[in-house]
Length: 173
Picture 1 (spheres, rainbow, N blue to C red):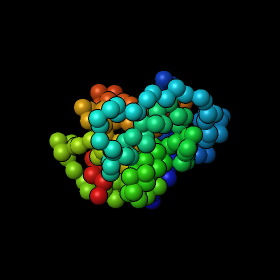
Picture 2 (cartoon, rainbow, N blue to C red; picture 1 turned 180 degrees about the vertical axis):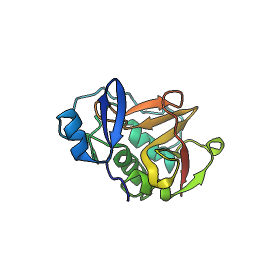
Picture 3 (cartoon, helix red, strand yellow; picture 1 turned 90 degrees about the vertical axis):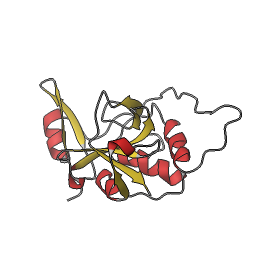
Picture 4 (tube, helix red, strand yellow; picture 1 turned 120 degrees about the horizontal axis):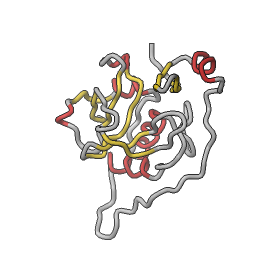
């Protein structure tokens, strides 16, 4: 079965996730939403002499404009996102239709190895290394960095492989 939402919670100093909202609410006493904030958005202007962005660069540019937006379960924007909602919206700006949930997004890409990663590819985290275990997705920026809508309580950000390593990789077709 596809997981369409992942609920993160902290228990005993460790982070856990579940695809079951009732478990999240039972463990935390909270509902599956986060409050929006008004974040600072850095400029994504590429500067003079830079050609217009197309394809994956358009997707990256769109996602970068949402740095600092809050994570919201099932968030499709424009002011709150979950991981797959941000990826879907970003690639829609590039004229590329992707499914809504992370595991379906992985299935819609061409699987590649980590060594084949290019800017604009998608990186995925799977609980068991398989497509059916995919629970998180982000946009690869190059240099070991990716843009993600990480989890409740965190905002859209740029992270690095040294922080949280993906285990599946895909090229948007």
